[in-house]
Length: 249
Length: 284
Image (cartoon, rainbow over all chains, first blue to last red; front, side, top):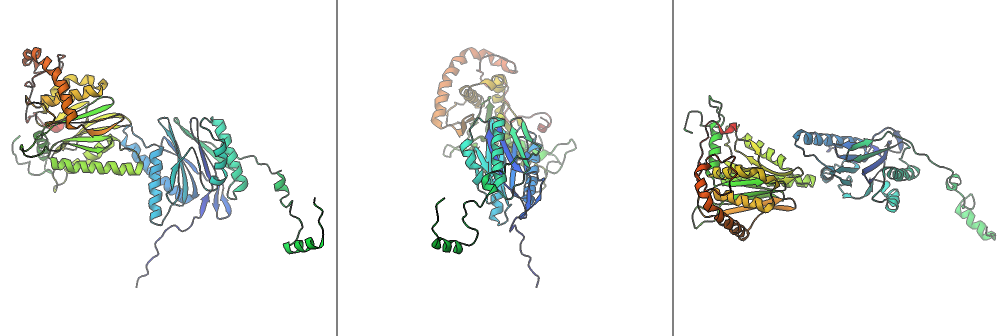
C-alpha cells in the first residue's frame, strides 16, 4: 500500500515582518516599515526591505511571512511584465493591482493555503491617489490611512486624530515617524531601522534606512514598580493590612 | 475569384502566397448587410442596416453590447458573430472581476484577432465568417476597430463593412476629417446618412436601421426605434432641401475623395456590391 503524502499547505509563518503604516498626503502616498525579519521571538534579520515599487504607479508594503512576500513579488513582476509587453499606452494602476492581489489572497485562503501576509498597496495614477490593504484571508478595503498588524491598534488612532488631506511631505514624514516610534516602543518585533517610501505622479522613491531617536527617561520606564506597595505576595500584604493602620501617603 | 486547386483547406498556401479559404471567409463578410462605424474624440456611433429573411420574421440582431464601454456591430455569419460576442463579454467580465477596471479596447481587439488567427492555421478549423466593428472607450480615448476573419485588425476614424458598404465609405471619406471634433448629434446624423447611402434608394426608416452609441459618461446602448425615427425625421428634412441642387453633380462624383460639396449624393456613384478588389484583400 503506497503512503499518501499529506498535502503541503501553509500552517504557520516562520520569518515575519512587523507593521506597515501608510498615509495619503498632498502629492501621493507615504509608506513606512521597519527592516526587521523576526524568526519567532528572535529579531534575526535586520535588513529586510519590505517596501517595493510595482510598475510605474504603485508601491507595495508587506508584513507577515517574508518568503510569501517574495512569492507575491514574483507574481507581480510577471503581471507588470505582461502589462508592459502590450506596449499600448495602457497600464495597470494601483486600483487594478490591489484588486488583483485581493483575488490572489482570497483564492489561496479558500484552498486553505494562504499567503501569510498583510499587504498595503498605494499609488497615484492620473492624479488620483489610491491607498488600500489586503489581509491573508482576503479582507480588503481602501482608506486615507492604513496599517497592518499592531499598527492598526497603535498607529491608526494617532492618524485618526492628526491626519488631514493636505499634509506636505515633511508633515507626512513627521506623522509617520511618530507612528513608527510608538510601534518601536511597544511592539516587541519592531527594530530601530526604518524605511520610508513615497509615490507620486512622477514615480516611486524608497529612501535609505534611518533610525529613530528614542527617549527612555520616562519615569514609568525608569521606575516601573512605583505604586506597588510591598515586595512580597498578596497574602503577606493582606495580613499586614489587617495588623496595621496605614497612614495614607 | 474562381475555384482553384489551392482552396480546399485553410492550411494550403497558393503559389502566389495566398490563403484562399481566408479570402473566401472575407467574402462572407461582404455578403452580410452593411454595418457602419464612426468616432469623434468622445463618442463612437455604430449604425446597421437590418435585413429580415421575410416580412414575417424579425430582423437579425447585428449590434451587441459587450460591456458598458464596448459594443460591436457584425457583418457576415451571424452565428459566428454571436459566439465571438460571447467571448468578448466573457473576457471583459473576467478582466473586470480581477482588476475592478474596464478592459482596454485595444487589448480586447488583439485577443479577438489572435483567436481569429488560430482558425487560419489549423486544418480541423475554419476561419470565422464575420467582420466586427468594435466601438469602445478607454483611458486613451474613443476607439473604432475592424476585426477581420484573417486575424488582422485596424483602427479607424470611420469605416463600413458588408454589402453596399462602398457607398457609405465614399460618403465617410468625404466627411471624416471633421469627425474628431464632431458633437454627438452630428456624429449620429453622419451615421444615418452613411446608412442611407448603402440603402441605395430604399427609404431610411428606424425599422431598417439600428443605431448604437457609446461615449464619455454614456455607457454603450442601442437607441430605441422611436428615437431613431425622430432623428431620421429631423435629418430627412435637411436632406430634402439639399436634393434639388445636388442632382447635376451626381455624375461628377465618381472620385469624390476631395469633394467639398454638400453632403447629398444619390449614392449611385462609386457603388460596388460584392466588390472585387484586384489582388489579395489581406494586403490592405
